[in-house]
Amino acid sequence: MTWLRKVKGWGQDQRGVGLVESLVAVAILGVAVVAFVMALSVGTVAVGECNQQIVVQSLMRTQLEYIKSCDYDTTYSIVGAPGGYDISVEVDSIPDADDEIQKITVTISFEGENILSVEDYKVNRL
Image 1 (cartoon, helix red, strand yellow):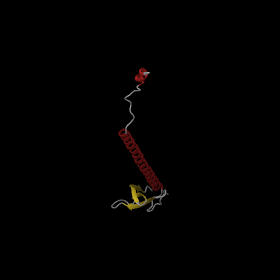
Image 2 (tube, helix red, strand yellow):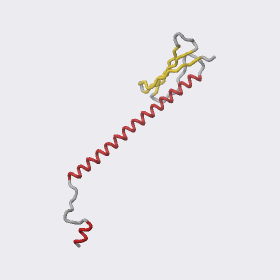
Image 3 (spheres, one colour):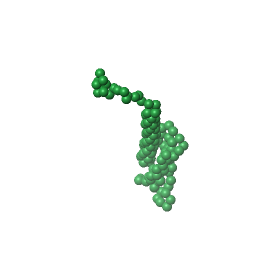
Image 4 (cartoon, helix red, strand yellow):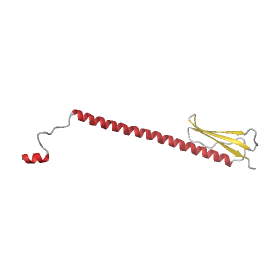
């Protein structure tokens, strides 16, 4: 029977896990879990900002394409925007230039904060 104990590692020098080793293992596990949760949080914020940029760019393209499709005028209506988003369109004539060219400035804002502003030009081709 003593031979079996020596082969399998059962013996006199076996001891359990101490308190310090357990605390270190729990601390390492806790740090790993906190790092994982923080990475998920940062990822969620990044996805939210990316989605907002996609919506803003889509609104900008839609508004500019709508203006380009309209007849040459001094005012243009605004396309529909989702809740929280506002679109403003400014039409200016270019000084010292032909009256047949307009500078169009489209600004997209979200909850009162300007997110994107783009300038384009429209020419009266008639």
